[in-house]
Length: 238
Ligand SMILES: [Zn+2]
Ligand SMILES: [Zn+2]
Image 1 (cartoon, helix red, strand yellow):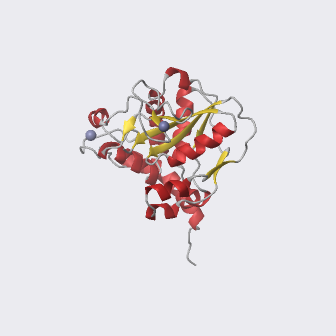
Image 2 (cartoon, protein in one colour; image 1 turned 90 degrees about the vertical axis):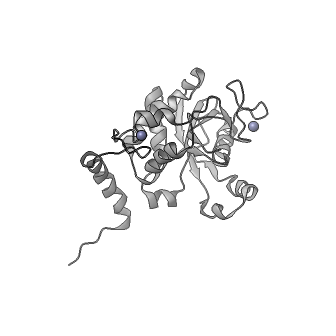
Image 3 (spheres, protein in one colour; image 1 turned 135 degrees about the horizontal axis):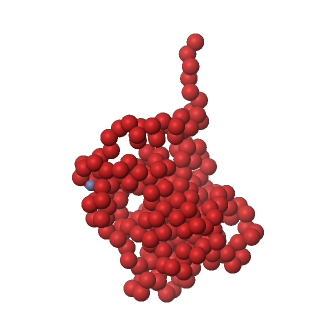
């Protein structure tokens, strides 16, 4: 009799074995090969070399304002990100996304919090940008939720899941051009629970801002529900 693991069981097993591997395997910084703490991935030197973003982005037009606020045309679409994407920050994002590293996400909570202006730290709720249910089942891990939980813990705010849902998988978007991709993604996020967010200060977390369309769509939903929302992302890919 052969024993076979059900596919849905695999992410669970990986989540159990991963911390063990982190413990057993020597950790090398992907930036320079020096020894590095497994929960940080990058060594101190490479971490310091990741280019920083000093001002908020606008999720709608991806313009960074000069005074710490996003473009004046689109209030309510500010996105705070500590990093710009380079080969070092890309290694962190990749390990977080495909390496299922909850310990890595936890260590990034203070990094995300550090990108927030003082006023934005007083949030009532922290949410992750929703991953489509199909994608989540495939991966068994949701990096945006992991980052949201880490940020919530860093600023002492509650983390909630399931308030926003992805209503359409966006797998076909890689084949589309920029404008078509934006249209395809628009409306891809909906509120599962539209009640109870009136006036609440919500932080919405994603891993990387590329086109800004996912955050834009989710921020618009939250704004429509009466929340005062802002985006937070680990890195901006300009
Ligand atoms: Zn290094
Ligand atoms: Zn704008």
